[in-house]
Amino acid sequence: MINEEQNKSFTKNKERKNKMSFILVNHKVKDFNTWKPFFEGDESEQLKSGIVVNKLFRSVEDPNDVHILFEFSDSVNVQKFFMDPRLKTLMQKAGVISEPVVRILELA
Image 1 (tube, rainbow, N blue to C red):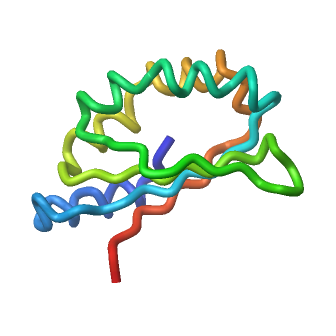
Image 2: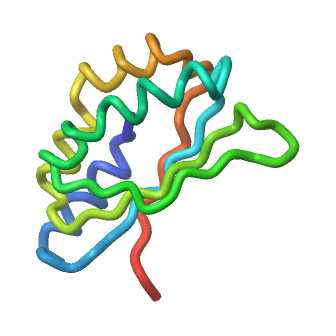
């Protein structure tokens, strides 16, 4: 789900241990109401990785255009979570129909 450049950003973020960072994920789903229970059902895996969902958004123009803001402090565990093949399988089952756009953010 994350590309090589983002993977390098996680490596750099290791130096910022215990500082909160954010990941903004955007993708399209086939049907939001079908997708959402899959997303919510994965909360325990997110929490195990130190990920907290700050906000879940969807576009006003297209309710199947989903944006998720995650908060984390441990970049190593988050990197493992987003690289895990289990996540890709879950996303496919949930009806994600586009490649996710992932942005790693920090407070300015």
